[in-house]
Image (cartoon, rainbow, N blue to C red; front, side, top):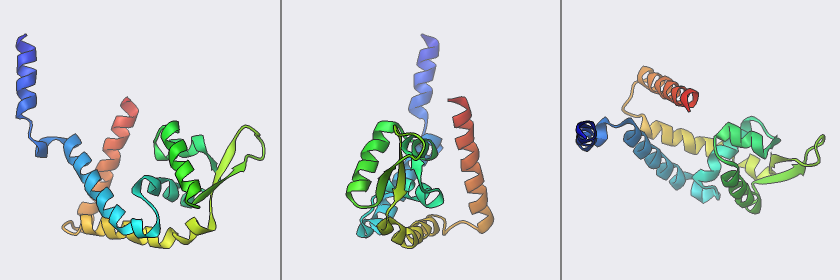
Amino acid sequence: MFVNSMLSSNLRSMRRDESLGYMVNHLARQLARALHDRIAPLGVVPGQFAQLIALYERDGVTQQELCEIVGIEQPTMANTLGRMERDGLVERRPHPNDRRKQLIYLTDKARGLEGPLTEAAESVNTLATVGLAATERSTLLRLIATVQADLESRN
């Protein structure tokens, strides 16, 4: 009982600006909003952005491979790819060696958006880090990568 009382007491006293989870989640929403404002006129939403970036790096992957690269579950990916296919951003082609699988490829429309999408992302990144020196920005990115790796290795 005493431990539960202390634990709940400690949780109530945690401030938002002292919580890594809260701060990162809030930052992610702010970044997504800023990105949305810049890419919506291009016919792309933030939920499609990670898939496009991954396919710009490596086109012609299976849905499962794309899930692993982007880090989302199969049902979410299936829905997102369905919308992207509907919007003319990706197309599915039969896998040459496995008839059960399909490969995901960018369309010409999506390829034409790579420059503007990259510029939009760079614009948001610049806006978000305008108050940081170049070394601080590098340190921030390195620290975020370390936190991600720590969580991935323990989950």
